[in-house]
Length: 139
Image (cartoon, one colour):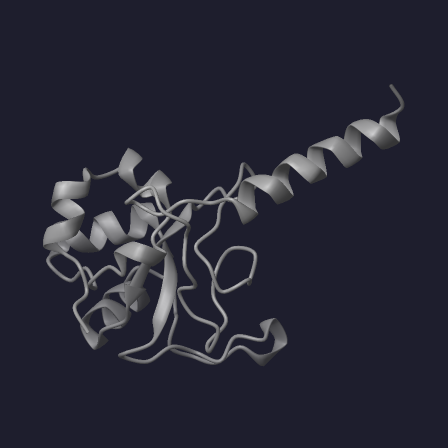
């Protein structure tokens, strides 16, 4: 098999994995946010693959407390960065967070609520569904 076909097959498998992503309930993953546009792939969903070292799998609703916490940890999510097409986040925005940062915020008592239907099933590798449900966002 030629290198071109091997690369194509890998890209096709990644595409199928992303488009068939499931949420923590085992249902199709829904959009987290398109404004601001979120996700590791900037597709609006908390999709992930092997290239996503941060595991941007948990869809949350931002709070001022979390944004301040993240800033203190060296991750400024507030300041707009036009060069990266990043508008900056504010309280109430939905965003795909890295699993480890969300867990860190949970331990610190500032974890934002989770939109379960838009949270990737791989988040279950970090916290059981029963625990996530306790932290679910209710509109």
